[in-house]
Length: 254
Ligand SMILES: Nc1ncnc2c1ncn2[C@@H]1O[C@H](COP(=O)(O)OP(=O)(O)O)[C@@H](O)[C@H]1O
Ligand SMILES: [Mg+2]
Image: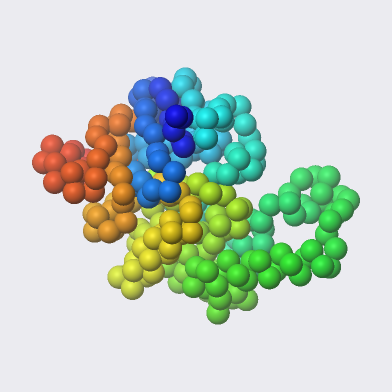
């Protein structure tokens, strides 16, 4: 049986720096897999390769048995994989609702042809999309912020909005790049509860996370990346209790 998502023999260099070094791993449908490792380990680069933001030098990714080789970012989203960004990439001068709307596929404006002809952009469709966007905001706990400009949202709310945008794509595999970093304790509880809820609703999550407490609370499986190598794979307890990994992690991190 083929893996849900498989990263196989991926190498990626930037000039003389090899960010990913024969990276291999699989993730299981329905699980929350946490990707951990010191800064510069290659975690975001893995996300970039999986989601079509960067082509691998060698190796490749398969999703549900199909190769993603050569697909564009949009095509990969249509296959069912969507990601957030470490640096958020929200439209700060738009409202929360409009940020979610912009992430719903099939909109006029998504392609040049759509922008010109706007074939399905009837008032009824627009109304339905706005309802859908409101439901998604409600789902992540931002219903009362729908009409607020993103620049007026707290950092924690902006991070929840990033998850809302990923949900708006309809993807079933969600790649979240440090969704909990920089959050207050209360906001952390919100995002952890949200990730668990998404899992019970059938989503599969691959999450880059630095906070050991968060990893222990949410991870079914942990992948430890170091200098572009997958060093270890196991449960949160196995990974966090390994003294060798702790030395690499805390020796290499800030
Ligand atoms: N687009 C890029 N151009 C040049 N170097 C990059 C680029 N993206 C990442 N790197 C380098 O690759 C290494 C891995 O980066 P990254 O994947 O962002 O690490 P992580 O997310 O684990 O902190 C780092 O040394 C980083 O500086
Ligand atoms: Mg990163």
